[in-house]
Length: 343
Ligand SMILES: [Zn+2]
Image 1 (tube, protein in one colour):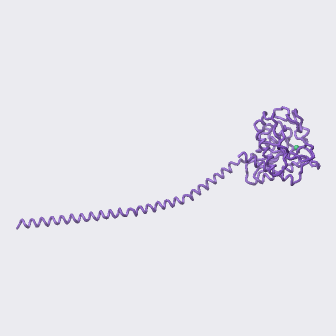
Image 2 (spheres, rainbow, N blue to C red; image 1 turned 90 degrees about the vertical axis):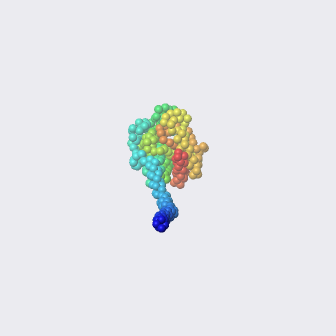
Image 3 (cartoon, helix red, strand yellow; image 1 turned 180 degrees about the horizontal axis):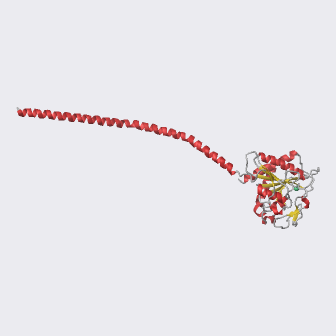
């Protein structure tokens, strides 16, 4: 009987242990399930992450606005750079005297007068157009200056004979058939052209802005060399013809192309001249022959910037305000064409 009790006691103990183990096993299972459940919850976390990512992407979507803002700043910088690219006026607007230290200034004999620099109020192009209304210097005929800086003789005829070493500092100019002087018409044309150019964003250097300026051809050229981007002299030809010959520019003679500063600049002179004639033609102005004539000019010989003498007709040409306005349109078109070709 004792043994039977022991067996029963053992069985009870074993059952108790098994029960405890079972409970522990269940607890573990619950834990595992809980862990599994937690793992099952992870996608929710991933969803949260996804939302966070989307939120981040939303922020990224906001970035383009920031990019826009940056672009705007960059554009502003570029605009500022563009503004900075436009060179400032070389000097203050107003009167411009000949600086005796400038190259070739010592060749000038009449230089008490002043050129006038006008600043545009339109969008500045950073281009100063030198306009020289031909003639208009009292006493200019009685003073002589060297035709060339190397003091070599003139290679063509013109106002001064071929072979001359010196020429009139400023010649008198011709007279229209109705008695009007070339000097006064050239000044009218220069002032009309000045207004056109200022309105388009060009700054303008007027080398003669009055009936008389005490600046000879060399002084005008040297001032332009140091202040302007180009120089355009306005003339009408004194050929004595009784019909309107039309417009042309003065081309550089071959022998001068070996003489400095012509050697370094004559191609620019030709380019500017041909564009002026093209512009005049575009606006319906009559063009003479092939639009050019080769003459040895003092201005060309001392120019270190694109430089042209343009003849806008002759004594028989219409010089009414309407005619001068049409010529100014043509010259402006030519100036636009020339500077556009440099870009
Ligand atoms: Zn002239």
